[in-house]
Image (cartoon, rainbow, N blue to C red; front, side, top):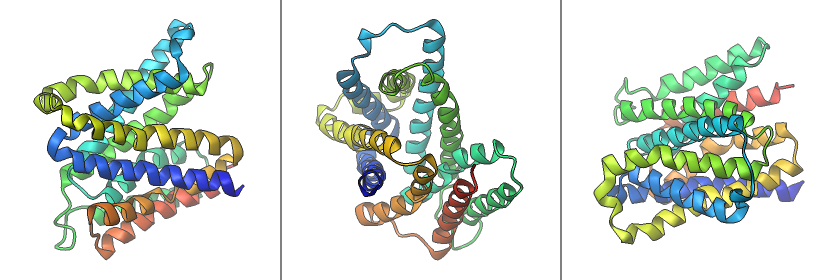
Length: 276
């Protein structure tokens, strides 16, 4: 049990470290450009690993994969727009509201209203309404919540897309559609920046840290540990993101912001523990 748990924690660290490197790439490639590079290289890596050209897809499969990819691409783009404006830990915490809301809405337990209230308190605490939170960009908060919404769609349609397909093939095609969805935004917003070939190695590095490595580790963990354990460990992600933001980006958070992150983590953890 220790090996898969360690693998999942490493996957979370890898994803958030990749996000910190992506944020450092924003001044050179832009948020939309960085998203484009990440998804483009990630899809190439997955194509090389899973070789989806060997498979025949039904029309219904392609429809579900397309919607899944649109949700994935939109989630990544909105998250990077958020990350461009607010600290990593807060962006991840607010993004968590999406899947948490989905879990609560699909549950019939009254206790989940408490978890929803606790998560709502977390959002309220980071709103720029006092001198303690004036530095938090409201547009960044909005983009993080939009990313969370698309994360919920990603979960819903990801389950449909992967129902009749190998998970690796579904992920590859989903990532490909995601890259195609984001490409126009990357070209329109940061097109000239993408012509700078010096950013390509960093883009590849972000794709490996944010997609290739964590995807492989998560797949290994999912096969070895119970779903509830997986969810509990994923609840640690906002805290890990905050620590990575502090260490790699020097992002200092106030006591109120740390408390907001704790509220979201507690809501996610409680919802997971109470799940059947």
